[in-house]
Structures are given as C-alpha cells and as structure tokens.
Image (cartoon, rainbow, N blue to C red):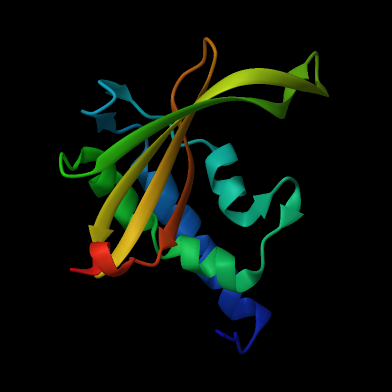
Length: 146
C-alpha cells in the first residue's frame, strides 16, 4: 500500500495530474471519428465515484494513467468495446442541480502499456458529445500477459 508523508505531497500530485489532464484538451479519436471532450466531470470522476471520494491510493493510481489516455485513444491497436445503459446523473436547470436518468453510451478502450492493461472510458448521453469518463488498470490474465 502506498503512503504519503504529508497531505501536501498528495495535493501536489493532484495539482500536477489536473495540469496534465487540462493539457489534453479536445483530441481527435479515430476509432470514434470525432473529438473527445475532457471536462471537469471526467477529472472529478477520477477522484469520486457516486459522490464518494475514492481512496487516495486509488486516485494516485488513476492520476498516473493520465499521460497514457490520449495515446490510447489514438492507437489503432486499442480494442474498443461498447455498452449502453440507463444511468442516473445530475443536470443543471436554471442553476439548480436535478437528478435525472438518461440513456448513456460507453466506449471502453483497452490497451497494454508498460506491462499493464489500461482501460479508458468515453461516455456519451443521448444527444450529447462524447467525453472522457474514466481510466483504470486491469491486471493481465495469463492469456493477456504473453
């Protein structure tokens, strides 16, 4: 388990991750034939899930993947799967956040880098733009490790 000697160390890692994330901007994704938006919501999802803060070690693990995201989206070797489901989320209407359910599409890009299987998730609500939603690692199975 990873330990941080001070809260300042973690805060510095988070600031660096946010700077890297903001530099990504709006890259072209050949597999989706469109640009992908990197909004504050995507970065917040690296920190929280369903409004609950992820453990700092988990956040740090995801922060380390940020430099790989754009490369994985552009890499023709990435395997892309698609899921569609109804999800709850909040939208702003006249300054008020309201809970709604919408159909969402998820594209999961899987790519092996540095001996790790990395997944990048792009999400799109009906009628909306495609935007970054998450990234995480998956330990390779025996078949994938070769």
